[in-house]
Image 1 (cartoon, rainbow, N blue to C red):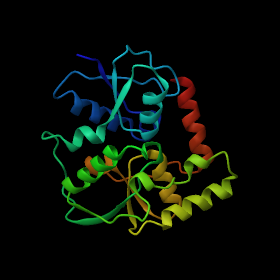
Image 2 (cartoon, helix red, strand yellow):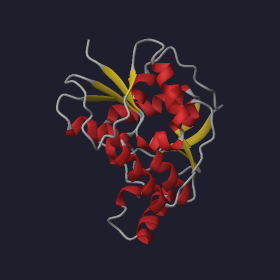
Image 3 (tube, rainbow, N blue to C red):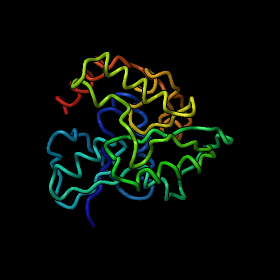
Length: 217
């Protein structure tokens, strides 16, 4: 059997490290899954054939494309098929989904996210640009564009969401949607019945935090 590990990603470990442990505990209810905290921008130092379970769209893209013999699967795909996880009930709450651009080419991830919301009794109101046609939240444009332009793009993307509550599955997207005037709802927060917190949302400061984590891991 090929090795499986769980990599929460730098953003989740900065955002809510306790939640990364909750995910690991759930995964280990059925099989033995090790934690893996090497950043996706560094060689994962894993044997060929290893599958990395991830919660970060950027990690998914980099681990699967940069390192030979490594495959990835999102936690969302696992949970969408789970008969063990206890899903909270949001009583038909309406929500739009912002699909993360690193997995724009992965419809299986888009489908899994929608299954999760449906299993939580959330009514989905789709944005015009979603799934494989999704548009970046704006964060990925930093530092290529001046920060004022980045914030303008964030606002444009957020305001294209038909609902005030926007489900995201990328921690950086939390900050972008908040800056753009929407109420971001991070998928893990929804699953574990927690509030989504913007925390440090200044884009420059947030990217400094990410870089420090990347350098250390």
